[in-house]
Length: 269
Image 1 (cartoon, rainbow, N blue to C red):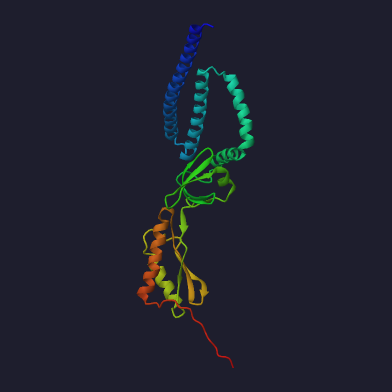
Image 2: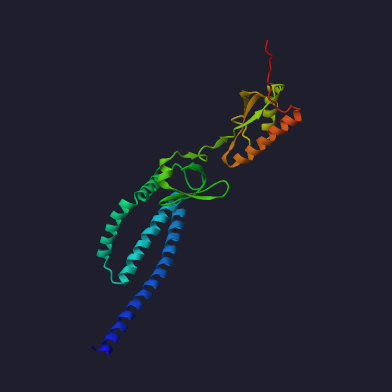
C-alpha cells in the first residue's frame, strides 16, 4: 500500500471539500446581501407605483422566499448536486410537507385570500383570530398584530380567515358606549339635558350624528342612562375617557346624590 499516494489523495479531497465549503459560505453571504438589496428595491418600486402596503409586503415576502430557494439551489450546485436531483427532492419534500404540515399550507392559502379579499390592511385596527390591535404585517403564514398594550401577537392566517373579523378602521366614525347610573331622586330629564350639553363641548365629538343620551334600563338604584357620543376612529380612546370624566363632573356639579339601592320592607300582618 502506497501511503504517500493515499495521503496525497486524502489531502486533495480535503482541499476540494474545503474550497467548496468556503465557496458555499461566500456564495451564501453574497447571495443574502443581493437578496436583501433586491427585496428592498422591489419594495421601493411597488411603493413608487402606489401599490397597497399590505399587498407590497406580501409580494416582497414571496419574492424573498423564491430568491432564497434559488440561492440554496446554487449553493448545492457548488457541492455537485444536480438541479434535476434537487427538483426531485423538492417534489418529494413537498408531498411530505403537504401531509405533515397541512395547517401550514392552509395558513398560506388563507394569507393569499386575505390579500385578495382585503378584509383589513396594514395599519388598521381590527379584531382578528381573537386578537384585537393594529395590523403590522400580513405574512405568508401568519398575521402580526400589536395589541393596545403594545404586545406583539402572531396569529396564523388560517385562524384569522376562519374566525370572525372586526375592522374598526373601515367606517369613518365609531360610537362610544358608556352609561351613567342615576339615583331615583334625580330628574332624568335634567340629567339628559346637562349631559348632552357637556358632550357637545368635548374635543373631537362629532356634531353629526349627534350624541345619544337616553334611559337605557333601570336598577334598584335608579335609572341608567346610555351616554353615546360619536367620533372618528383615531380619537376613540380620547373621547371615551373624556366622556367618562364628563359624566362624573356633570353629576358632581349638579349636586346629584350618589346612587343608592332602595328596598321596601313590609312587616307581616
